Image 1 (spheres, rainbow, N blue to C red):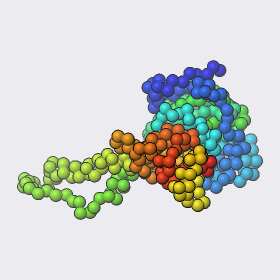
Image 2 (cartoon, helix red, strand yellow; image 1 turned 120 degrees about the horizontal axis):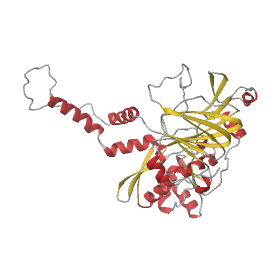
Image 3 (cartoon, rainbow, N blue to C red; image 1 turned 60 degrees about the vertical axis):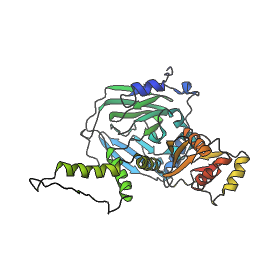
Image 4 (cartoon, rainbow, N blue to C red; image 1 turned 135 degrees about the vertical axis):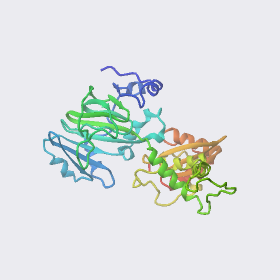
Amino acid sequence: MEPTPFDAAAFLRDTWQQKPLLIRNPWPAWGAAWTNPLTPDELAGLACERGVEARLVMNPGPGEWALEHGPFKPRRFAGLGTAPWTLLVQSVDHHIPPVADLLAPFGFIPNWRVDDVMVSYAADGGGVGPHFDQYDVFLIQGLGQRRWQIGGRCDAETPLIAHDDLRLLAAFEPAEEWLLGPGDMLYLPPGIAHNGTAVGDDCMTYSVGFRAPSRCELIAGWSDRALADLSDDDRYGDAGLARQDNPGEIGADALDRLQAMVAAALGNRAAFARWFGEHSTAPKDAEIDWRPARLLTAATVRRRLGKGAVIQRNPASRFAFVRTGSGRLTLFVDGGSYDCSGAEAAFAERLCASRDDAAGAEDGTADLVTLLINRGSLAFGGG
């Protein structure tokens, strides 16, 4: 089929978080033909490694679903039989650089919203059943074909089947259906019911997922941080208290003072920005450790930078920044925060803007680069 032209501005205006969209082979418009970055054998090998989140979903009969968690023994894949099954491996972009490269075209969405790239492999008829997600996702067909059925919008009240491990819809009525081939992509906003089924063997799908923190998560996390900075001596006061007609009433003035105490503690925007930057960049896969065997000195880093050494980002690391003033910003990497200005601020912006080599490091950035290398967020020459 003909490639679908992709207009990022129009997509964000008309589609993002609003409705599903089928995008046929957009890769030529992004400057390259589609190339599958991972083989099925490589995915299976990754699913056998300790520290990698992998699942196996099997559908032995109508309405029957079973789930196994990895890591798996290699012989497990040889004994799966003929019933439909699907292997899912989370955060493959953190382990396989060519899979991480799939994120480059999605730079029109802020980096802090990116979660990971999950990769699935399914035998003929395999799938994970009809369900809905609470996040945005782009489903890229890598190999083979998958039929996607799209239903209506779901929420917390939508009935689910009784299952200990899988959140599958009790009733699913498809409203649209598409067959995707290699390079085709389907966007789904949060809450949309969908069901994907492999058509033929060697069906690989790349799921680019985006995070959306819940109000509960934000309040809990920020409150915990704010509490750590408060003193038990900071208490309610009501000098000039006026006598009430009924001592049992909690008066409006008291409620205003009490709520203002809470609002003042939680309403510090600069402190909230620092907490959220650290929170949103906290490592998801702490076991992917790029820290050097021996800590580097700034002098060593400065000398290597002067010789044109290439610096690379740890694919499992998260980078973001918040502007704090003219020429100043706070860089957030792997849950840490670093106040930057001048050359360091300019370098931090470049570092956050691209997932490629951290180009542009110079003598004035050596201290920051040294710190990030020693913490495993950057490395010389590929880790």
